[in-house]
Amino acid sequence: MHPGVTTMSTPTFTQLDIANAYFSVNSDDVFARQQTAIRRAEFDMWEEIYFTSATPASENDWEEYAASLRAKLGVGKKMIGDNLLVMETLEVLPGFRELVVELGHVDLYTLRQIITTTTCDTFWDFEQVPGLVDELLGDLYCPTRPNQSLPSVRTVKKKITELLRNVTPEEGEEEETETGPPGHWVEENANGTCTVSSTWDAWTTAKIEALIRKCATENNISFAAAHALLILEDTQLSLVLNMYQASDVADAPVWMSPFGDFNSTDSARAAAEATQVRDLSGAQDEATDSYRPTSRIKAYVEGRDGTCRFPGCTRPAMYTDKDHRVDHADGGPTSPHNLISLCRHHHNKKTDGSIGYLLDGYSGAVYWLYKDGTWEVDEPTGPLSPKKANWLVTFNDITQQLKRTPGPKRRPVTFPPGMDPDHPPF
Image 1 (cartoon, one colour):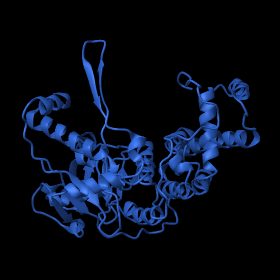
Image 2 (tube, one colour):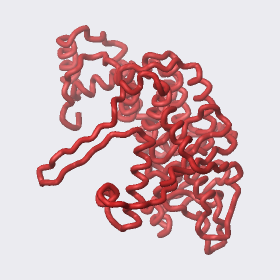
Image 3 (cartoon, one colour):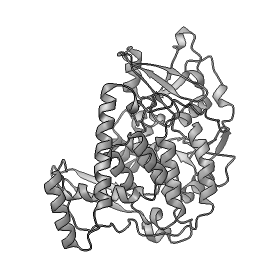
Image 4 (cartoon, one colour):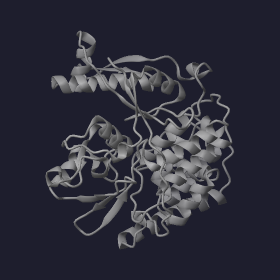
């Protein structure tokens, strides 16, 4: 097996400051305005509850307090606790909070998902880390173009997790005792089948996942069957993995789809096992006469896009088709200026004319056009995207100043533990 091809980042781009930038959820559409009003009202109510309520000092106080709010609002105590934790955490994320209040574009469900990702000592124990998360969220939730699509909750949580992962202990410190050794479990199911689970570091998992997918594709079998085939039979596969690491930033993390940024330990291991290094500077402007992109062009497009480019779709770019905006048969070049990553579903939608788009080949922004006359802009999220390149420099400058020591996996919550989640929808 050949563990990988490491591809390097391109020079950073300069983004334009567009005065009339806004997210599609803040448009003049009547329904968009109504939904924004709902988000604002809900946020304002919970913020007022947080600032006007004393924190319960004991479990008994909490039970009484939650019961009182539940009677008034008709929501469960878990949602009450989560929403108050949102308001508490936003106090150390002032820039992000200001955006939420000003634009009214982030609902409480999304805020709960974001804050859940930050409930760890890595976030709370280092004074620089909340500022770093605040800057990341500001970057994600501050529009830079008119009618820009909001980032998906999954994308935001993943980026926060990547950030926190890279301010954990360096190799050789106490990290192994925190994470524990790799685990293996076999669970018997009611129908007589068994579920086999293993826990590995990100780099090992990436290689296993890629091998299973390649074996399944070459043998036209399921992933589960491929997993068994690789273990039980002497199967030989040659594997190429594309990894991305900035060459102009010291100690830059290795990025690999679909895992995102590796921590420092996995980054070092992945880079050490790479058998070939390719500099992708200049790949943005390359082209080929062939319908199929070259390996360099394909690697650049996947590294720029990160995922399928249809707004809200999180299918990793490495598992997508490469679509010509102007069809190759009509003279469209096979070049990053004319290619984007689309999952098979959205590729088919574009092919049958249900949706269409325009591509800014320099920034990678995709302008989606819908049949009812509406439109929105999707920005790339991969390691070669302009925002990622700019963010990496900021991130690296700050993380070099952090003292990296481990802490418990989760921060002790303000409210007493042991509260079982209520049944949906609460």
